[in-house]
Image (cartoon, rainbow, N blue to C red; front, top):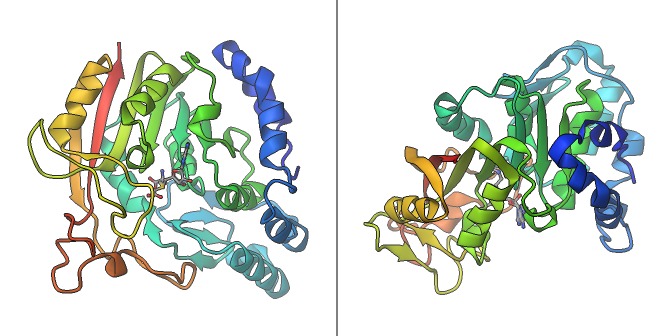
Length: 324
Ligand SMILES: Nc1ncnc2c1ncn2[C@@H]1O[C@H](C[S@+](CC[C@H]([NH3+])C(=O)[O-])CC(=O)[O-])[C@@H](O)[C@H]1O
């Protein structure tokens, strides 16, 4: 395993003790190269990139800034560039690593700008970010004052991308666990804020997902739920026949009012939508660092208000809710 989790275990106290008991086995399994063949391709990157710590780090910069160009030699910069290339595709960002601009498929900073102003102050909070991707938002949460951030995501590519940045950032309070939400013990009630952004529509059982998120929160904690929605009233929901915007695994896309109903039925209070935004082809697009298809290829070329399958184009809501 390339990651030393001893600091994480040290910080997992109080209600997190229950998870600490099973975590070592879960993590060993996730990092098992026999079970995930791609790790053989990605892990060697960690032997070839410069072994330094960044001096100039700005977790509040939209292009998350880790190190200045002046902190590395031309040779080290090339090693970094090559290492980053080996960990493509880069979907969630953007970052700037020792002067190398990493323009990712998503402008995840735009989502953060839509979310952050509405949140309970993150200062001193323990946060869980479910489906955290490369961990871009985890770093931004820490930049906004969180005392500890735990990001979980079952993608081992995202895990490697996160660990590459973690190598250079001298901060022991942000952690990535390469696990799905299913791996979190029930009734943990350990986090002050739980984020689930871009995950709900991938879940076959959305109500169970909401209840899982709730069980991670302490009483009085805040849920931040960001997901795809469709226009319509409390009775409206879209279940794609097959793909949605060429994405597999899209199950339920409710209206905002239906989503609010779900959260109320799950026992949350103060449920409110704070942002509704159409995803633009400026926010999600192919770049040098993600050269596959992106949003413009998923939309009907004749009518970009629809996906290629004829469904409404991606519209995303941010909902906040309090656990009683
Ligand atoms: N069972 C699971 N448990 C946890 N995560 C999962 C699971 N299954 C898939 N994921 C992860 O959920 C993330 C969803 S992406 C949102 C990223 C970020 N939050 C963003 O808002 O930009 C949006 C998208 O791919 O449509 C991916 O990284 C999956 O690996």
